[in-house]
Image (cartoon, rainbow, N blue to C red; front, side, top):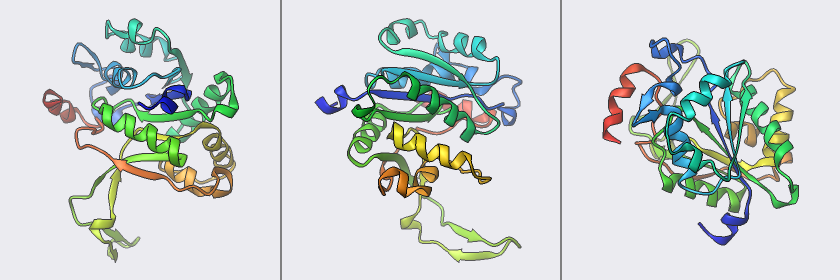
Length: 247
């Protein structure tokens, strides 16, 4: 990391407030066992070993801190990894958007110096195999451009369809990417964008869309794309756990 990176307050938000109904395991996917810990602890360790973060925030279901804490500390290294990092559990909302907004609000209350332009990384806790390179590249790009996201090139040809199920537009595959997490932003502009979004009826798919929806609040800065990695996949179904032995 560069000297600038080291001096900038960095916060990571791990989103783990969902119900994991598609897993069919009866247990939240973030709390399933993995590599001597859990999916959640593996994701957290990936960040805490890649860079220094002043704060780790985990979004959890209402009254779910106990289970999340147990899953996080299933990795015996966690007390050492968190030695100089503030740990905070935040209740999520009805949607991922609400959960992230709650976490951003909590983060802003804890960061001491607004003029330092702290950077926040928002990551799906169900993506435990995020690499050090992705984390560091995303931080560096966010510091330079205000917002950044890792992405991988589309493999299949993409089409836009109409409401009646026919092809409406043929997209250029070379211009299409699949975005991953962490999505990194300057904290305060993103919080302002989330505040504005919370006053509308629209539900946004991710935080890059919220950022882009309010250029007047983010300094008219676009999200910078950095190289992702296919190993940084999201565990969604039970069979996804079968792939974990490769990483």
